Image 1 (cartoon, helix red, strand yellow):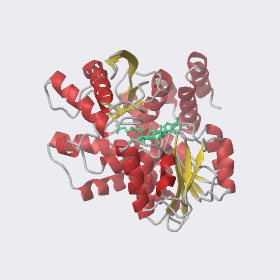
Image 2 (cartoon, rainbow, N blue to C red):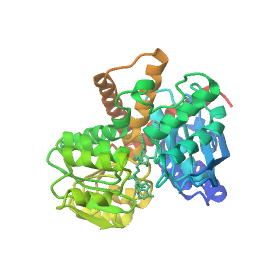
Image 3 (cartoon, rainbow, N blue to C red):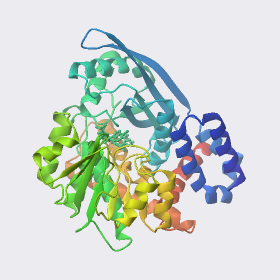
Image 4 (cartoon, rainbow, N blue to C red):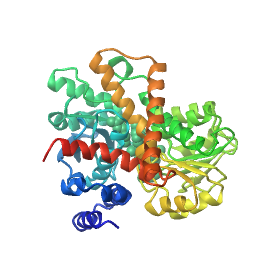
Length: 447
Ligand code: NDP
Ligand code: 2IT
């Protein structure tokens, strides 16, 4: 490996070994930059890698709140403002008990390159809390969001840092946080994206990550002269990204045969069509139920407690849309055995490095999350543009722009991969294309 990259990686491992997913994401990115770093002395001279792996700023705060029993609770709040070379910090907020600084550093680091790929002017950031919205009343979620924003508001702003949703943060939570921000600063700002349609949100933002994932996969499949048409597709997760991945894949002629949540996976050999998906959306988004309940609605489907969807049934395309490291080497082997020819990541870093390498070795097309799921943040960027112009585009306009952006990301990843001799290596292509723009901006702006 290139000596410069190796030195930076060793330092990150030594100082941040306890932040395993952050080290994993840095390792994946840096090792794939080998050829571009070797060919351009300016990156080492300007210490770009050392500067990229340290957040420009990371804020940690306490969030005290009162639960329905009148008891005082306290959670951590975080915002990692990773890199602002090409625009204001931009990235989601995650509420999940597994959230800690290391998880948000991994997500913020990924976001730098993803946002760069969208072609829109957005830097990288991520925030969140170890608060678990599961099982909480609506009043508890509201009071938590308000108390979270009571500290976060001073660190964000339409030209500073623009958060959005992620795991555990959807339209409801964005609404409560926006309401609190507006009350404190007394200004109707474009300070969060994923807003409601009546108050500054963009059409297609809720659908954008899942639709973008399907659009990216369509481009990638076309390079092998094929498409979703008639193919069986394994999807994981049943939240925002999974739901709209399933919807678009089905519209494009695919048959989705699995979905999941953290308690297990369902297999529906007949395919999860529009009517069944409507049931799942109501179950997950309104009733806030569990995917296991799907078998009460559709008796021919199976629920396998504790299982991941990989290898449970034949599928030629896999689209992991739940969480990081939910697809490991064993899962990758099972998928290939069951006929998998392509993987498109809706989630952030759902495949382990070993799984990714196995796919590459077995000629499976592999779209990394930072390229395939960039449609969500790209449409957040479009929401910011509409807010700045004080107008809103039609559904058709936003969808056409999203489709164009995903086509563009696919092309620039493929072009960069081709330039460095591995046309099918979307990991290398996406990382190089995302990196160059940010690194060159950092050099332009001086030390
Ligand atoms: P949601 O909260 O809407 O859904 C998350 C889904 O993943 C749920 O089905 C959840 O199951 C499952 N899940 C979460 N944690 C785990 C876990 N530890 N093990 C197994 N399953 C788990 O989140 P999103 O759909 O928004 O996000 C999903 C992924 O997509 C994340 O990686 C996120 O970072 C990424 N992403 C999201 C974007 C967006 O616009 N929302 C944009 C780009 C990427 P359960 O209900 O049981 O917890
Ligand atoms: O991981 C992601 O790209 C997101 N959660 C969306 C971020 C955003 O600002 O829309």
